[in-house]
Amino acid sequence: MNDKVIQLMAKMAELEDELRTAIHEQESKIFFEIKGKRVEFESSVKAAHKKLKTGFFRWVVTNRPQNLITGPVIYAMIFPLMMLDLCVTLYQWICFPVYGVVKVKRADYIVFDRHQLHYLNFIEKFHCTYCEYGNGLMGYMAEILARTEEYFCPIKHAHKVLGTHARYKRFLNYGDAADYEAKLEAYRMGLGGKPQVRKS
Image (cartoon, rainbow, N blue to C red; front, side, top):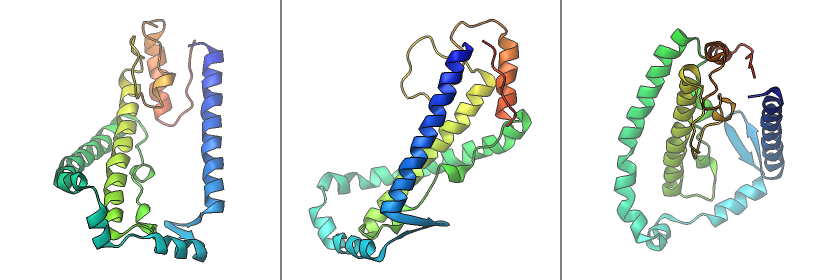
């Protein structure tokens, strides 16, 4: 990968971060304010939200029957999800310090805040909490696996792959064998929080 491509990718990542921050700040100013772990709405917005809440019995009657029927199947997945959570967390606690890789912060990926929305009833809040956990866990696990891949084999595939992680675009091109060991070591040093050196 040449220097120009690396610089452009770094600039793109920086602009994406800037855009995310700007959008979040705009949303926060319009709708809510974050105070620690609490999300607070203006009193008028909170009152409007409470009026929009669907009561439990009305929710049960108006809900799609297929959602209620498949509920037990969906919620049974909590057991494999929790086992996965335990396994990947243990893996990074044990292996990442040995490799010199910075550990992934679980709290950056698994965030519970939708229960603070007053227009959701307690069943909807429960659903949201489950989804926050499941999707947050997938993001957390994906980042652990991405750092593992960057440590052991930071090489792109020859074939197009959908749903690649954010680190993938910085990987070595398929078949780029020149100075592979030196480049691999540079990736590994970068995972320890030290500046990364990329050779073209």
